[in-house]
Amino acid sequence: MAFTFYIKLSIYYFLATTYNSLQNIMELPKKGSFVLPHA
Image (cartoon, rainbow, N blue to C red; front, side, top):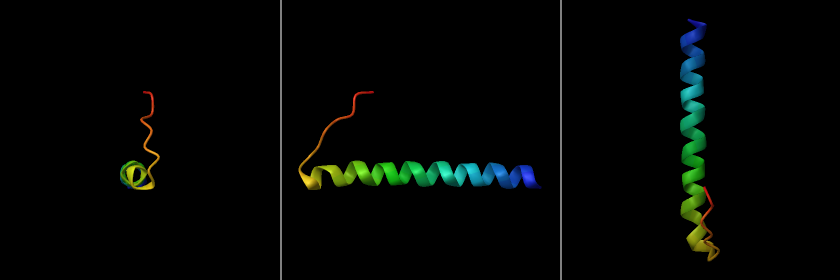
């Protein structure tokens, strides 16, 4: 029970951080300081 809850929590956390980073990437061109990060 706790293991599945931990898996769901980690998945939700991963999705939230990914969505937040995507929003930050989308906000960059609006500020006029669009810099591509070097992977």
